[in-house]
Image (cartoon, helix red, strand yellow):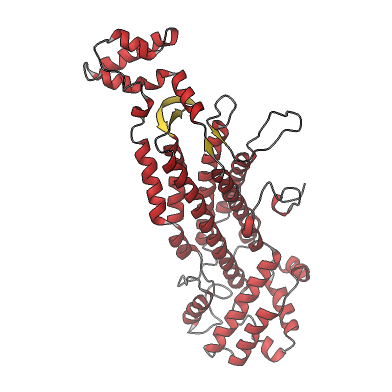
Length: 441
């Protein structure tokens, strides 16, 4: 097996990452590092910190000269970061020492690496936003279409009270809607420029260091935090936490689908399913299983990443390296989970007959409603006790409806045992979710 399922030709279709995959490659990283260096030089030239001609030359060279990531491996292994080797290689490739000497002027490795990472994370969050929007649209359609389709709600694995399939879908989508709404603030909170120099004091940049950082942020369309954040990993941790919550929400949907597609339940069907190597009848819920597995991976990676958030002193090499080892697979796992979820929801269909059969097979699901109807003619504690006794009779007799009608022949009970009339606010919740998606998309 390959070291990562995301770089494996064998598993590429099982764990698809879509366009997000191109953002987490050596080539993408080196290109973003060059872009930051080139833009920094251009801004410094405009501000008179370095010769303007040199700034323009370096910026153009950053856009035109490709660098081989493999050629930086030896220097990265020796220095622990890629920037010293990149600076040396880039200066030679420019073949203009009079300009190249101003490359990386006053900055430090972490400034360039963290800013380049912000550029790619900005694109990544845009892709996640796009995917979430498409997924929510599919959920809204399902929720609205099946807002009044009754089915059993289950708690602790047992039938509880009637709900609707639309409300179940709305339950899956509500946290996703919240997560999408948080994205603008997350971008402002986490997609930052970094430009603070060797020890975070901007000592080599002079008195106009804050202005330089602000101009670089403007040129790269990033947020200027107004300070150094070399050892404050809050922005990275915030992105990781958001992605972890996203995959947890997707996994909740997938876990429910794994249960609802069981042979004994079969209340929904999936558009695509996998086959068994030996059992011809099997249609395995592969995509739903993959989402759950990806979410578990994200949770573990996030624990490691959050644990590395306590950087020692002004720079912590080990903690920083931990980010490089965890953030890319965490991000790609979230992207893959979202890809699978989109495919699942676009092909998902309820099985009304199975839902109706489940409701009819166990009228004990209406026990709560019966207890409240009895509470209209007796104190609530007595009504609960009477309902429990009727449930005991129902388990050995013809069912709860028959037992209740025999015990209380003058009490109106038809609506109590009608699932359509016992869904409570489920249809309204489903339609409200669909409307909310429609107004916020």
